[in-house]
Length: 175
Image (tube, rainbow, N blue to C red; front, side, top):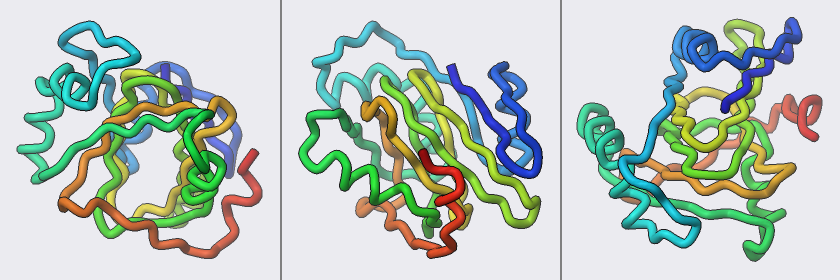
């Protein structure tokens, strides 16, 4: 279950998925919860996972012009897991939307919305779907569990590249 934590200018926690969806959608960030069409096992292949969510994934991709989807599985035994964590722990933007669906595990998306003078984080877990619009300043942390299995959806076959802001804003909030 997702948990939204407002960090600045006020501190507040929101646990109700409907309230989280309203908050995120009001800021242009899509938040939904999806369910698999069939039971999944930890050892299932990328193809099986994508098939289990095709009923959600296919229409979303077609409607929004996405061309590629894959599955990542990052865990404590992943080679260079700390380097992978550090790559996304600095505030950045993307030239295309960052779209993720959490098949298992968890991760924190942090957002810094300068126009609203807000900083908040969203704990995404199994069943949570998020689409961060291109140009939104954010960062991602897979600690403390170091486990995320997620479907990534891209607008181009190459995927996206992080454009770091070098603001240092994340340093105040990172664990």
